[in-house]
Length: 238
Image (cartoon, rainbow, N blue to C red; front, side, top):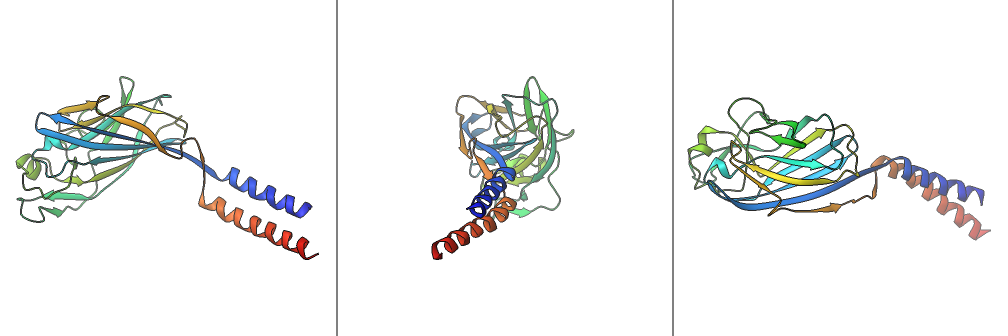
């Protein structure tokens, strides 16, 4: 009846009006740099007006700072004209002398990371293009026990981000339909090594072009669907 149609319409409108879109792309890279083996991943999510980026070092027990991730660069199919770093989160540690557990918690917040657009690419880095001035710190280090760590890790560029650093960028013009391409992972304080194209795979891993209901939308939909069910039960009893 009319009540059922109205409730169904309300549910559909709630889903459509409160929907959020976000596409997530996953990239991985491995290779060899000036200080030895390198390995890491970048997970980049595109959304309306911004990007979220998770950078993870997957190389266990590194020896030198040159094996730590210091940034990422990439292109988009619709490049923004401006970009800014709005937040950076992660666990900061100071690597010690290699005795278990090999590190201590570091105080403070993540610093030195920055972002820039250069040569048609977006850079997010703590070393090189986009980074703050001064000696790079807060590079991303892989899992311990850090028994091989030399002075470049233990003192010269402390502290480090353990495992994963998460960053949010504001990028006007970017949408969930924006495609991430040509990703490069940056390693070391130069950066010393750039792994790009070869050794990197990319694929959309979640919500690829699909609408994702926001929690608020679900609260609107639930009463509508409940009402629709009650209306049907009344008709069945009649």
